[in-house]
Length: 122
Ligand SMILES: [Zn+2]
Ligand SMILES: [Zn+2]
Ligand SMILES: [Zn+2]
Image (tube, rainbow, N blue to C red):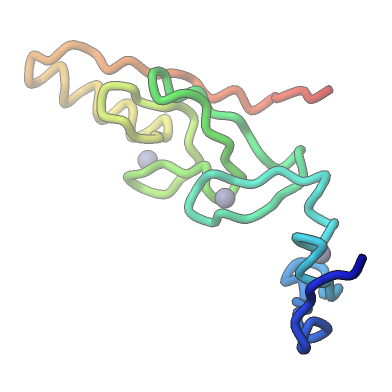
């Protein structure tokens, strides 16, 4: 029983962008990301478990974000909460501003889900 492999099978190798190791297409990927967690933010990259935070996004469910993606959607400062009312990540300063605006406009307070940075794994 033999494999029906193409002639250029040996050229189906890729170089891992993370560790520089080359791996064959049949391996499905470089093993270096096996113990890592993929960030669901815009970077779409793998990170150590310690570098990611699972953000509670209410009805949208949890989202795994790395430190680089865990940013306020308004000012790119480190986010401290997820605003379920406007669907954005927010920092303390922007949350305060939004609360002031809401008050001024007679709107109810936004529902903020605080981001727990002290995620303990295992
Ligand atoms: Zn690798
Ligand atoms: Zn990320
Ligand atoms: Zn902000």
